[in-house]
Each structure stands twice: as structure tokens, then as C-alpha cells.
Length: 100
Image (cartoon, rainbow, N blue to C red; front, side, top):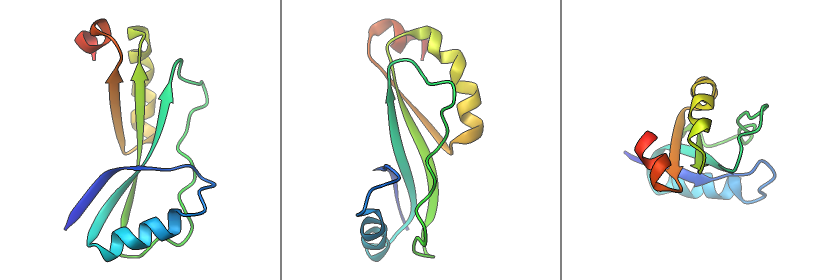
């Protein structure tokens, strides 16, 4: 049982089906499809649609990585927790690291 919790993903990626099939062949059972956001968080941020017909052996999760340079963005993270399976923060300065 293997997990990969950071598989970069964009909805129009033509190779995502091949990537998921290969990860399944390697024995992965849980995959987090990840998107990254840098700068100010958009008001209407939501997970991209999941790929059609993933291997049945895979559990797909959604993950967002937020590159934080302004600590005031931390209050916007609570609504993201309801939309994404995983939230990762990448503080870009010491002040953000202290408040992350």
C-alpha cells in the first residue's frame, strides 16, 4: 500500500490517465492530485474536476499548496479545508513561517 500525496495536476493534462494507470501498476492506492497557488488567493478557488475513469484501485484526493507571503491570507484557509482533502502551506518568509 503506497501513497503519493503530491501529483501535480491540471484538468487539461493529456497524460494524467497514463500517470494514474502507471501509479496503480506500481502499487499506489491513494493519490492526491495537487494544484499550487502563489500570491493572493482567488475568491472562487475550487478543486479542478477529477479525471474521468481513474483506475478502480486508486483513491483520489485533492490537494492545494498555498505559497504564502502575506500572513493575512491565513484566514482564507478555513473555507479551503471544506473543498480540498489536503492543504499544504509553503511560507515564503520568516513572518509567514511563524504564523503558519
